[in-house]
Length: 49
Image (cartoon, rainbow, N blue to C red):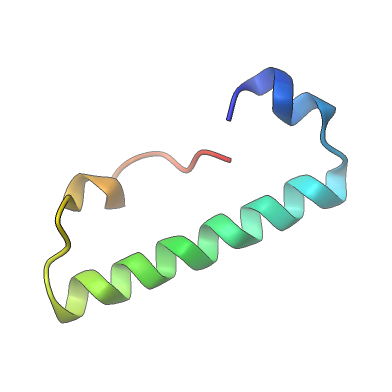
């Protein structure tokens, strides 16, 4: 997400997006541990909201 969009979000909305991104990251790590994911560089990519 672009910074201009993030600036328009409320604090609660940003927290919710961060919570969703963390959950997605955790699921991706678990999936990679079980069987290699298609693009492992996604695990290294910075979290974008």
